[in-house]
Image (cartoon, rainbow, N blue to C red; front, top):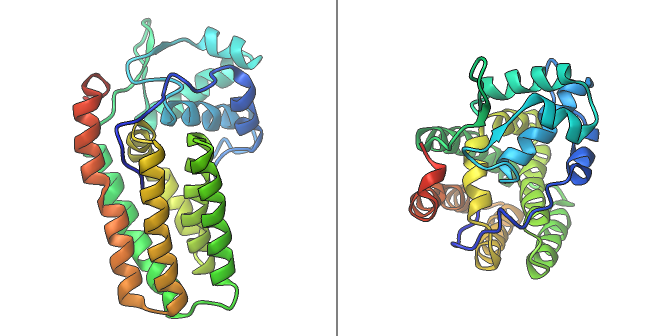
Length: 249
């Protein structure tokens, strides 16, 4: 998790190049549209909404999005429906489609789901840390340092995600991360709005505490560190509502 008032939602490149790269990675595991153009559109547009390329309240249209990605309107329509079901878009018949504002209640529910699962994940990893755990986590944190120093907010966010997903893999329950990923979109929107150098450094420090507890096999300390790390979501939410009131319901 990250904090700090610094955010650069306007500084992100919004041309379709980087987003199409995201789309080429395919849909999330378990999505019925996986492997289809519509599925890739879901992934790319969801990434753009979460990372504030498309901001709360922005008006979008099937024709504009289809032109941006060079696809027909049918897969865009299917993607819009899926994103509406996920609470990211508001589709108004015969009127413009709007990027939904962030739901504070949705953020709190996302945090509850994530913490419930990740605390169990970290407990499993710390109970029986393998011989490679220390090196794996150290490399991930080193990469985060590089992204933070480069002020690469997008890159840091991806590495932050990788750290937590790797913990799930080390626990032998990587699919659990997919469950988290499917329910944390509202929380991620808040996190992107709070990205900054001070926030990334704090996240890195917290990751180090978690990693050290895991390597030592200190289950209680690892669990406490993870709860503290994820529990800051409420602070971030309050801060972000104050800084960006127009982005919230």
